[in-house]
Length: 110
Image 1: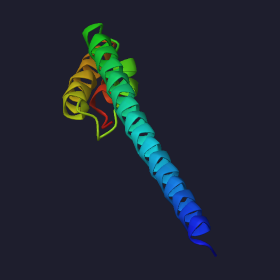
Image 2: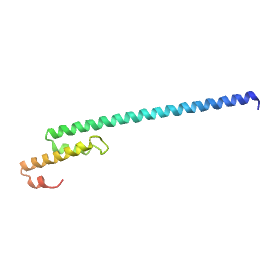
Image 3: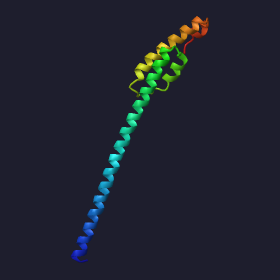
Image 4: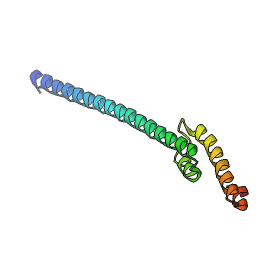
């Protein structure tokens, strides 16, 4: 192999290596952007669930409140607050049941 062909082969390998490096960098940036997007989307969804949960509790829609609370996952920043609202919704539901003279349902464990 001549010196010129060896230089050409070496330049080709460098170009391939640079292309692979650029491809990997692009892939890394794409993965980071996707991860960031998913984090924002999850935060927005958790926030929507939290707002809905609060509005159901305030409206006295305790069954809906309890159902909505199931949608808030333990990893959510709203989970602890949701658990507090669950207790308020259970109490509100029990009070409604007692007012309707559904005493057994009002004191039954849920």
